Image (cartoon, rainbow, N blue to C red):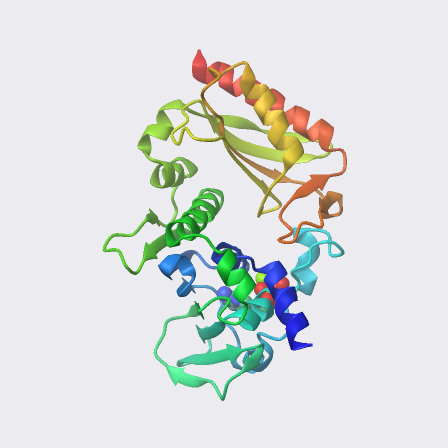
Length: 326
Ligand code: ADP
Ligand code: MG
C-alpha cells in the first residue's frame, strides 16, 4: 500500500515545478497578495514558499497532509469541473509522500505561529510555537528521497530552476496585483521580483524585460456565448527559441492545444517566419465546459465549443497585431 501511495504521488508530482504550482495555487486560494519562493538546488534539495494568506487553523494541522483533506469543496466548482480536476485535497498529501514537509503558519486569531512537520501524510509530533507573521510557509525538502525512479529522471539544477521560473513568471503576469519573488539560495540576487499592485505591463516587464513592452498590444476584452477573454500580445520575440503562449482558464495555468494552434494561425500573417509569438490569454468559461485530460499532471484542457472561442481569440489577436505593426 505504501508503494502504491508513493507511485500515485509520483504521478501527481513529477518534479519540483509541479509542487511549486500546487503550492502557489494554494497560496492564491488563501487570498495571498505576496508569494516568495526560495530554492536550493533547483528545488530538488529544498523549496520554500511563503505567503501572507489566511494561514491554517491549528486544529486542521493533524490532517493537513492526509489524502482528501480540503477546505475548498464549496469553492471547487468555480475552478474546474469537480469530476475531472483531480487535485482535490491531493497536493499536500502527495508532496508529503515523496518529500519531507514543514509548515509554519499563523492565522489572524493566533498569537504565535506554529511549526508542524510531516512525512508520509502524517504529522510528526505536536506542532511547536515559533515566530512568524500571518500566512503560511511551506518547506519541502529532499524531493523524491524515497522514489529513485523519479529522482533519477530529474534534470539539472538549472533545468528544474528554469521550469519554476517560467511558471512563476506566468502566475505573476496573471495575478499581477499580488507580489511575487523567486530566489535561489545559492545566488546573491533574486531571479524574479514583481512588486505588489503591478500593472500587467509592469509584471511582464519584470519577467521578460522592459523591451517586451515596445511591441505589446492588448487584446480587446471580448464576451462570446462560450466565455470571455482578455489578454496581450507582442510581436517582439524576446526569447527567440520558441513560442510563448500563456493560457489561463478560470485562473489556472493550463495547456490548451486548440487555442495554441489558433494563435499560431493568427500570427502567421504578422510575423516573419523565424520569429515566434508571445501571447497571454486569460479565459473565463463555465466550469462544466472544461475537460481536463488524463494527462498525469492534469494541466491540458479542452473546452466544449472551443472552436468558436478559439476563432474569437484569433480574430481579436489579428486585429491587435495589425495595430501593433501599423
Ligand atoms: P486542495 O487545494 O485541493 O484543497 P491541498 O492538498 O492543495 O488540497 O491543500 C489542502 C488544504 O490545506 C487546503 O484545502 C487548505 O485548506 C490548506 N492549505 C494548503 N496550503 C495553504 C496555504 N498556503 N494557506 C492556507 N491554507 C492552505
Ligand atoms: Mg491545492
